Length: 383
Ligand SMILES: Cc1cc2nc3c(=O)[nH]c(=O)nc-3n(C[C@H](O)[C@H](O)[C@H](O)COP(=O)(O)OP(=O)(O)OC[C@H]3O[C@@H](n4cnc5c(N)ncnc54)[C@H](O)[C@@H]3O)c2cc1C
Ligand SMILES: NC(=O)c1ccc[n+]([C@@H]2O[C@H](COP(=O)([O-])OP(=O)(O)OC[C@H]3O[C@@H](n4cnc5c(N)ncnc54)[C@H](OP(=O)(O)O)[C@@H]3O)[C@@H](O)[C@H]2O)c1
Image (cartoon, rainbow, N blue to C red; front, side, top):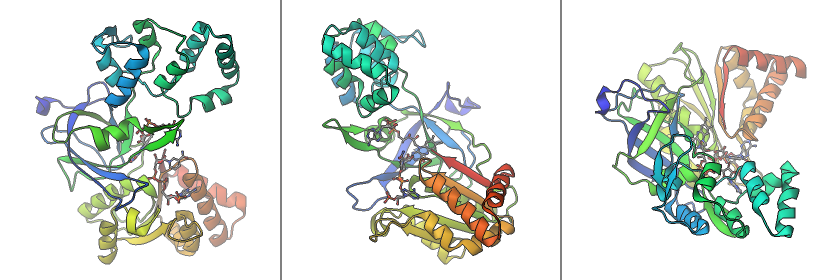
């Protein structure tokens, strides 16, 4: 059937198989980043390098069980999904339709309205009056924690289901080029797991992709989220500087596969960062091989291999003169990965490089970087 479908969308995803997955981190107890290969055979699905894939996850059955328990409900009870108007067994609804991890303000408000214990009601009202405190309270708590803390409160099953947020797709940078892997899509997924309020919590989608979803079964609904300019330059002679610590490396693996398949003559320079060379050098053999073949200039910052933190922006600053020369030569500058700290620090380093090596004032350097961005030569995919 699938081969007749022309295009897959968020509403009509392709159901992919996981062909293989393995941990890219070697003997690393604190971190797992997996290489996941999705099988696209017979799908006619097409993607471009720089695109992301949207993945619909499934909630962990243990989490669903915990939720059913606090709801004092049976998985076979019937409920209607208010969005699609479809009827489901409750267990199935909680597994694939509902966000049972995050709680909306509206649900907290409803719990507060129904709370008969004056002390607990007072606490909730206080939280509802202070959005920072509410955010802090909800952080690391899942639906079952909050309902358990307020076991005086009861809901009709349909009522609580209507108050749950939908389970949304998660996005992953595609780490392969179809010029090299026509029937596959590769992902680089960091498994999220953390302890909060006395329990181990797992990221919904990463736990699903890395641990729960069986291999070789058509089971993972996916769709393409096209890039908005974050892709290889049109001109294969254009140089590329790529900054991708951690999972930020993913699209650059795709870029290199694409450029090699194109026979591109432009130069490539990769700045990669991770914890430790021995354990966390994601796709290390590939980068070293490309370096050996003189297809890539490589700089790596392993933050935890020495006392003092070493990050990609430190390497950028060390190589400032040459970076500036590449920019003058028309190079594109790409950044992918953590938005909260890394991307800001890298931008600061870029401004500093331009200021020092272009003999500019701070304001002129900022304006130069702004112009790079406007010209779509400074491209970011940060999250
Ligand atoms: C454009 C884009 C591209 C991306 N590409 C990639 C990629 O290539 N690889 C990749 O691995 N990820 C990528 N991501 C991130 C990915 O989409 C997911 O956000 C990530 O995998 C976590 O999803 P999850 O369902 O496992 O976690 P969720 O179940 O969604 O949990 C995440 C939430 O857990 C909470 N949380 C996390 N840590 C803690 C803590 N210590 N204490 C308390 N609460 C905490 C936070 O509320 C956080 O929002 C990308 C995101 C975007 C937007
Ligand atoms: N919201 C956040 O605070 C936050 C932070 C990081 C990552 N994330 C998320 O975690 C996922 C990716 O994690 P990951 O483990 O693959 O990569 P990562 O956490 O981004 O770590 C990759 C490397 O970047 C280093 N790093 C930390 N802060 C940095 C900074 N300010 N500038 C430059 N490098 C810095 C890390 O060093 P050290 O760890 O040794 O400091 C590590 O060596 C993404 O989903 C990302 O959004 C979120």
